[in-house]
Length: 523
Image 1: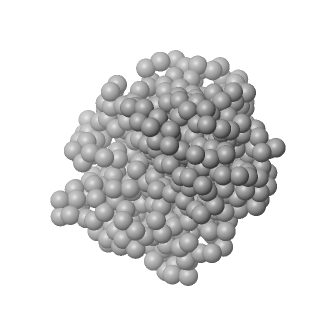
Image 2: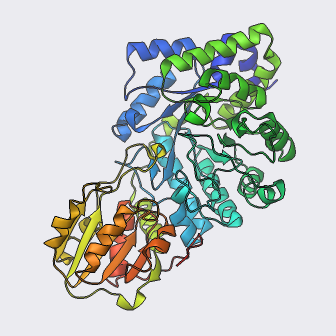
């Protein structure tokens, strides 16, 4: 009999239910209250957010303590996608993100990003990354995926996503493709509402499902569900994929033959909490075919969901056989990645922020830069003044780990004037500051100006003073709103430090801009 089956057979029903729960904890350390809570539930997984993180050494210490108090070592997961969504930034290699990788068109670089990220997570005791994003972003108004996607081409997303997943798993970290069956063609954020994707099955098979099918065939070990309704697969239009047996069992398990872990997106998101409710949703998603229920923030809801699942088995609503199917899959995966044996404690040879890792991040950032307009103005000459918009999270998915660096920081002494403005200035206070600005050409950083048009007013004010060259730090969809207002535009797809340096190198002629747009941009 397999070792994981020995574990399964030794478990009480309460311990099995605990394995189905993947939960967040409130702080960077374990209080007595948190330890007591964890020992009640005995969760199968713990998720880290920025609230849990101070530095890599502290993360490693927290992981050690979590393993020490757990009878069955948990998955320790994180959203370390690269780019806009990273929970750990200080002390690790920071990559520019998926859309930047999409602009490089390089599966080799996607693999390296995954491998390096995985190695650095592994040394901190994080054994599961909730990445890569396999959503095909083909909606310019998508508020939550956008630059987290590799692009709009299903085959490109499949190739790069599969490569990143392989890199993570070669580093002994479980890759989790998300958000099945696709969150790329929505104009709503499931953190706040319940999106609907109305495409027919033929289109979904040819676009949205392609990356998931490809990654699964190449060994992806986990998939996260989407809180999105797909009427083509689920006729009940109040039932999102996370709660749909047609989607999770009929489509993912039976049609796509996926036998890895199925993990829900957070059940506290309003797409679930404001409809069926977090606790009832926990039972429904297990009925539908999920293996683990993610409840990220609220201890009382975590405990209620644990008790509700336990009661569902005792009442006969859920069978213990159904629970055993998921727990066996969980334990088998933990065994496969050495989690139950805690192999990760013997990995001191891995160094964080190794020079070769930093160079890979720089290579990706440089290779991604794409010129959309104004190549004849490069390299910039004369008195160059920079107006930076300070990076700001535009969705709760981004947490709070923003870069304090700006393009002006990257340019340092090479510029004439530098002005930093708030991303969303609702008081028009920028007018007085811009009025005092001087220069021969003005470089302005922009962030999804098509969705946040206040930035257009800043550009119009600058245009009265001279030529304007825009540097896009998020998606290039904004070019449709900027084309008539700017004299030049480059896309970086990222506000992270390596991308800012790469942008300045392009603007000053130190390097070329070889990137290829991974999405369609209308001028």
